[in-house]
Length: 108
Image (cartoon, rainbow, N blue to C red):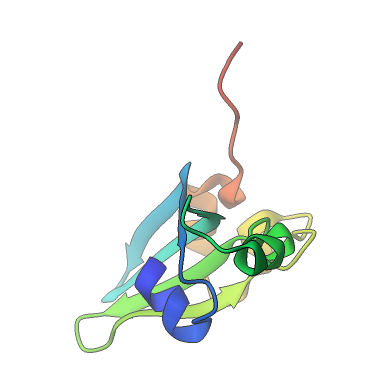
């Protein structure tokens, strides 16, 4: 996903998926994934500033055996009230399986 996102937004050279915020699945012959990104320690000041808003939005990707991974959408900031169910490019069956991309934090 990182390389696919960087092809669309090359200014984000030093990013990685946020741990425990990655969703993936398949409908028919199409694979889908969703994640948020965070800056790596090598990010420049400009990249850190750019990621302040960009990093809080979930990014969506799709892949087929013929095309490889490509970036297809972002949920914006703030995200919609129904999580990834508000993103029309993601099949409804996956949004249900993904719990609308909600992430529950670690228990205290």
